[in-house]
Amino acid sequence: MDVATNHSVTLISIIVGLSLTALLGNLYRLIRDRKRVAWDALPLAWSAFLLLFVLNYWWALVGGLAGSQRFTSVAEFGLLLAPPLLLFVACSAALPSFDAGEALDMRSAYQNERRVLFLALAFYQLSIWATIILTRGFVWDNIAILRTTILVLILSAFFTKSRRWDWVVVTLVIASIVYRIAIQPVR
Image 1 (tube, rainbow, N blue to C red):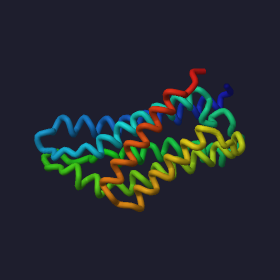
Image 2: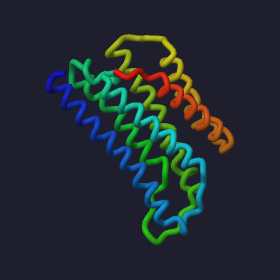
Image 3: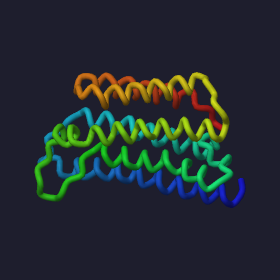
């Protein structure tokens, strides 16, 4: 691994760490102030998905599967930064952040932030596709089918605007990421 690759992996790991900090920090604040929170399981389910999703992305990064060793220009490096930045946005939007002392309705907060969450996840999938195509060429395999399925499900939730459908989507994407983690090779 050369110096540029080491630095890129370090920077991306910092952004991934900030994503987990945003997600887990918001969860901690909700738990800490639980008496003022009107709980809703749907954003918690999306948070569980994101936790698995971020950990899988980080594992791919460390394993050299995220393209970090294949960039040859600053533009490609910029594209390489897009997925972790989009994960940060998704993690920040998954659970509500609120000021101390204010009552919080998680259902209402989810309705306000769901579009940001879904757009960040959709653009994440598109940026992963772009990175793969630039660094490895187009490959249509089981993982590509899984990525495409997740993208289609997330876009359908974005356009459908139905809580019931959001539940179907989050259930299917959690199953998808659990499957992906189960088959991810250790290198």
